[in-house]
Image (cartoon, rainbow, N blue to C red; front, side, top):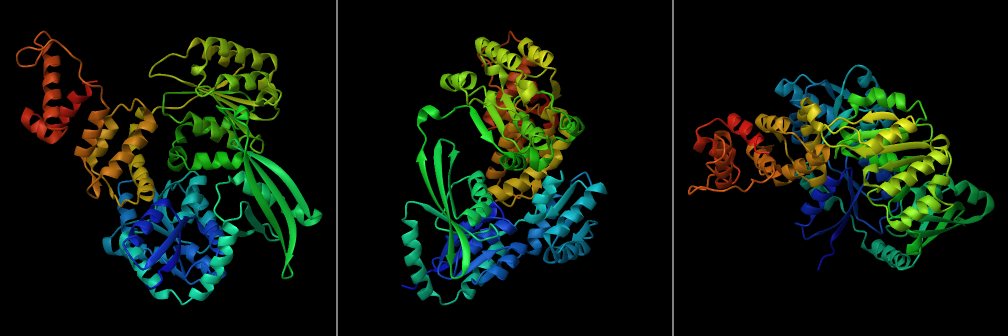
Length: 594
């Protein structure tokens, strides 16, 4: 039997990875391994492998170009088709603010052709390297542009500049063509692959992970896949100069209940000097695991924020002025908001912008704290309450018992914790609920700056934009090719009350994209899913017809609507037809059901 062609796929986003895996699984002559990484990360991934490992590398855009310059393995580019670019342009069609297309020449040439053909008036900017990307986006932002259509490299820069983006994603036809080219491009390296497999297998079976860095601190070899955090890999990279100077170093890191032991040595191999790490792990005793207490650094906080829905959609524009002023002080902050409004993401953003950003951020989750964790927090010498110049985020204060609240209040007051550290609090309020007494006590006694995160219902005019941005993101995650949402469907979302705010919005959008059977999400689909979100009917004394005639006329009408909708399985069009009313009238009456 003929050996399968081994392909290393480096996808710029999760959705392309899933589509590559799906299409490759339909071919019996391909063995595919896929990683997700942008331009620089893609090069790092490719640099770990040789002709012994793969016959061909499959990647996209500038990442493919960079890899081909450093790797001996043949590189095939997944090119963006005209249809791929058109799909993104259609998603942006109804965006209400200024936007532009930013990309490398291969993208902008096709985009210009489509604009000329379809008579679209879209500004197009061509870039040639990552430095030019940042300069172009900075200029566009200053000129009032709020969104760009772009590739992955431009997308990450746009998010950090507070701009929205819709990504050019590769469709099925583009990936199929690239796989065909990869099969043709594969060479005859079976002998080399066999030899490399021999040594690779020996190292993979070794209980330690092996990392090799060059003198510039770049990772040039990794023995096997790992799940170590960026804090671990950054610690190794940052220790390279010391190990080159001293010859060796051994140190430890606590990684979420796992103790990581790192031993680094200076090695000279074929006249080249390297730093080689042997990394081993062992469990930390369970008694030392602090449930509800977590340490993260600035890099992790940036990842959490910019990869979240709030970071991708720049939802904090309405409170940006307040956030900018808060970043200029060290005063305590009380973040107030309803469930699902992103108070945790707000805390991360405040930390990222503060002068304490190079110190740890301690997150104390009052909803998850356990008795042993509370004892550690309030009594142990290694408690974060013993720190200085640290940002301490105490989230969801409402979950503390009265005794815990009084003890926490006393510790902060007596130790002057808010003077030695930056303290952030959050408290979840219900709609129109006044600030509770204990929350007001914290605000007043510690002179907290109050920051109220607005609910989704107060920004209904933004929902149209959020829908398209959400679809763009979900297309990547779920390997879907949804083009947009019907105007009536958007209107239904705008009129909904969103009791659980952005968390509920993200969940509903994910279900709509996942279950869609047409390029555009229909109003009927939105109606059905929103109907499921409403409370169920209340029981009442029925008449012979099943209706409670003791109710008011309006209540009886609502019972009838509830019954007809149930019989029509939530289809509002057929229900409205049966009732002899318009869909708009029906929707207004459905809103009264809650």
